[in-house]
Length: 568
Image (cartoon, rainbow, N blue to C red; front, side, top):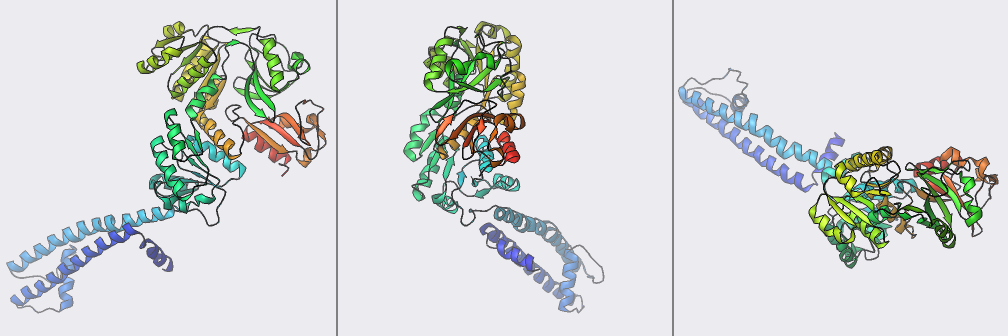
């Protein structure tokens, strides 16, 4: 009983619940007046018939007739009494059996449940919360970012104005607070002024207003905004955002950086200290059919081969592994060393034919612009005439129509192109096209975007060589800003990890550690006393008080921590 009383007292604080309760109370008062009136009339008619009953009997008769129980122990003898009984019966059916249940459900039970739901989702962060990340929408970027924040132990909260969505997130145990994104109180309740950063990731027009609201109460909190349109970047910056991320444009540029085109060359994809991490395709180069050891890249150029991309998977290096046409080496070295490799490999023509881009939306158009800037010819396949017209000036040739048309793809150069970029916004279509293009051209390099990370494995099985999602790029950009480092996009789910060497690995060699075999991580460098060494071999010693630099996925890193301990 104490629990019920406390719950009712809690719900009575809710404004809507109090309003509906008053409506229900007014109806009950009206019903009481009707019952009292009918009881008085009952006595008047009974006296007219010569019968005498107590007031309790009057109320008893009124309730039994209105509720349709009708015991029949008290009856009228005249037609006037029977007509009155019919009136009381009809009133009871309407007032007690129809209106009262509806009113109770509509104005008490449903508001009680709604009030319970509303009060179930917190409206403010726990007391003492600080250095947390606030996210203004639970989208694909937020979903990927949350996974990484959880791995790092960084607290975060989703701010959601919609009750249904907020309840869904709450039931899924996603930290969420409910509040209007246009009210300062919401961000005050979220303790914004002590937050690590705020990610504003709704529509561009909505983002502008949210940023202005945040800046009213928290002028110093770092705000990262995601811009769908390039035209919105300046507006969001002027509104108060510290960093604006045009992720769709960046996604197109990243896809363009992964194609094979014209001459063989290394393509930088990341940086550690003053060293560059780059990809080196081996297709149509003297490296095909050689083992990693036989390439002698370290002896000739000073670079280290740290991993291999093959069929969309990054794999640890093995000196005995033979390189095939579809392998892409991941190397690390200085800018001068990479330039020396490019000078030698420039003699080998990968393929002079235009790169084929399928889908000319925001991502596809950004890829076309990036390729055009590098002097690489592009053919575009696109259904929308407006997009075809927009892209025509920077394309070698535009082919209007659907990409599933074999004759159209053949005219666009699918049988001769070195690479194809699949940039439609539909994952199912991209998977279909990857499989189709792979069947048409076995040595083709297929670079594709995806919207949902869960489709990555399917895309690789369909034949894609490189896959990158909007979500992964966005979350990686946010984390790079939060850690004050350069954005490094190594691949979907692939990241650079820098950890102290765990005590269990100290003074062991790489061969004795078994890091690659047990976790799948690729060790690319050792940092000791401020000096970085990338000359990794099986005999490389893992010294104490040093850092180990590795490439791999977060799952691989979790396995590393589980097996060896994180050294922290």
